[in-house]
Amino acid sequence: MSMVGQWEEKPRHILIVEDDPNTADMLKTYFTSLGYQVSHAAWGQDALAVAEKHPPDLVLLDIHLPDIDGYEVCMRLRSQRRTEHVPIVFLTERKDRMDRLTGLNLGAVDYITKPFDVQELRYRIRNILRRSSLESLLHPVTGLPTSVLVEEQLEKVRADPRFSIVGLRLKGMKAFSDAYGFITHDDVLRAVVLILRNTASELMAQDPFVGQLDTYLFVLIVPEEKRYLVMGRLHQRLGEVLSFFYPHRDWETGQRSDGQPLPRITFEMGYVTASDFNPEGGLTALKEVLFPPIRD
Image (cartoon, rainbow, N blue to C red; front, side, top):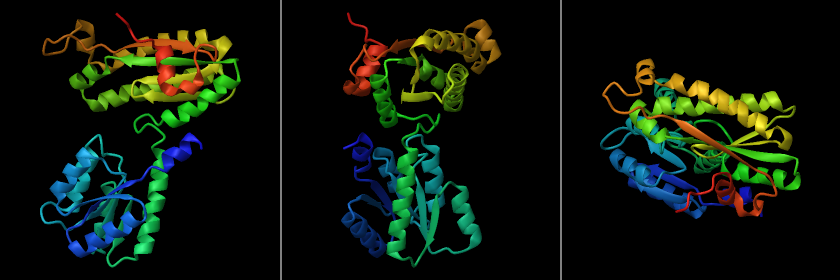
């Protein structure tokens, strides 16, 4: 069985936010019988607490709730990093065009009015989750292929010794984010990815593979004879670009406006070939060979 197949077979978690007990019981029973993991909350605040503790794969959200309305729940889910990309489907009796536009404008992926056909709802949710499954193979900030897709690419290196894997790891990003905010933090990640893609494209005739092992660890598959050239250009360009994300005064003085030391972003690079590691060891083995742990 392929790794992608294994990943797709995991039960998907649906959070139903509905204060009508009859509708809630019907939906919970129905989707549980289809093999979904189902949670239920009758109040908006309870739904937010459930989503924070156990982020769902999809939220089926009523607009009329006893405490805060569904629009407010949607906005708060979108404002949290753990739930900002979770698909939200509004389920409501409101049929007015402006209500529908409001929900879609807040980031909902669908808007279903009561009374509804439960079979139609089932197929809509199935299709949304399928699209979400494909999108979740990509990092939500950078759009790069992540773990499953990266692991599949290891077979390419194992099968063809002409290729190497170049790894790049960013360091100091958490302190940088704490000082300058997650928006600037994400801008740094996107800039780094742009440099990786452009550098790889300049030196390779075919579309290069650029992937992301975790938030701060990136990999490129490059021809063996070009690995040092790729690493040299990356080192030069990243050294030039990273300073642009700091306030000019902070960078020049080496400290923040409050007198605290400048949280500098640094990076390190490594490379491996098929002979350096066993691809069957997976991504953990790859990380350890690219960046061996420091041992006492």
